[in-house]
Image 1 (tube, protein in one colour):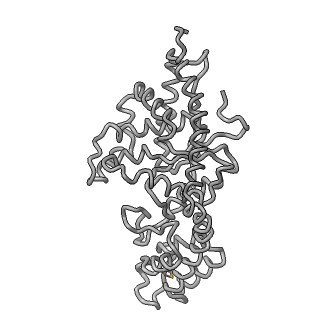
Image 2 (cartoon, rainbow, N blue to C red):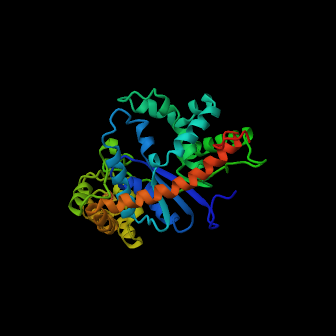
Image 3 (cartoon, rainbow, N blue to C red):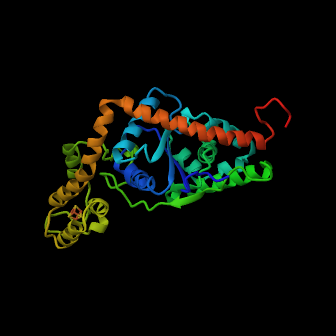
Length: 343
Ligand code: SF4
């Protein structure tokens, strides 16, 4: 059975409900999603259950965070007419399939996922020795396969997760068949180019480093953050030449500035013809140009959040329909259909 009725390949992807998004989230995933919605049949979900794998102890902000993520998606240009936007926990079939997948997934597969050990070591302030944390790649597999996702947009560090989804799909298909046919596709990783986006301190942009530029930051805040952003350490004095390739502000220019501005930055920085303050002003101009229309679009939903909830509700209803059909096939294949007969 093909996943998509309209001939377009089906893409499934989610984002944890961590609240308002920053430029790193935009460049790393969201900007791509906005492009993909014209090309593929896209299912994008707010992964609120995934947020619990690390933030299980305090769930008071989960719902609010889901809304904030959705507002930023809509602001960035995701269009509910073109793609399906929903909340993971509103489609309980994700959890049902997760349970069934957890029956057939060997523990060793999960323990060798590179991000498992890395995150357990890095997030020292939380106790992550939880079953849910170990099993989150199984939930990811269920997220994708419940909608029969064929393509999963990922950065290179996520390829191992898609590989695990493919392995779980293969294992399920080996055990259980539906009239001699496989229930699940083996989704492909759709490798997305994610340019390096530094935060204001030069490290990777991340909320936990406190170095973010948020999609909702008003212009004066963006300009102020840029002013304090680190630059090429070789430019100690105004007269010292610099190198945009060694400067986090240069990285921002590469992503957001026009070819003309980039040429001015290259020339002016390397010859010490411009100062960093001027250069940062140009970078701020480019960012504001991107962020202004997003913030304009966001306003409508901020003033009337029900509009966004309605979109989520309609998307979740559609997703439940697709997921329900998949679960019927899964139950049939496993000989556990809901019908009272033994067939
Ligand atoms: S002139 Fe621009 S690119 Fe060069 S070091 Fe200063 S901020 Fe960075």
